[in-house]
Length: 215
Image (cartoon, rainbow, N blue to C red; front, side):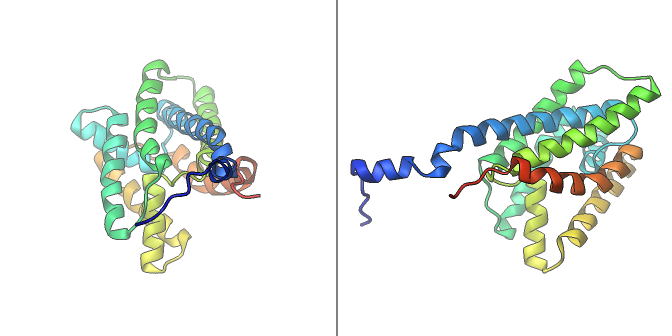
């Protein structure tokens, strides 16, 4: 039988751990990042110049099944989490939150943000959407509370296949973009710009948002 040390000194040491003391900040940053991520997805949808690679699939499925895009995001996230089981990936609170929050915020954003007709404004939406999406990505990854369902699929496949992150991620996104485009998703300037810029931008921003868990 495992004996737990519930002495005041032991409890004080546990509470004083950096992980425990920084948890409120990590949770605030996590949900702020996920909310911003959903908003930026909506910005790219309204720009109608191409969406995030995975959103090409989400948009295509939403049009085929006649449901909201946010609903598709949530359902696909849950299905991807089922694929984590054979890959032996472990979800965290950030993973589960990502699966639900992003889809809900996306739908809310599409209700609040009207369609945009002006081309300069549409281009501005794309540029702002890609940059702010990188900020959101760095924010939720930087709290170390679990990868998103799509990121976990990529890391699981990298570990199981021995392939490089670049090759595995590019292969996955190529498949989802092609499938989404066939289903009616939007591919365009925003899709290409996102694919080229999100990695470098997130790499630059991540050190600024990464929460140190150890002294």
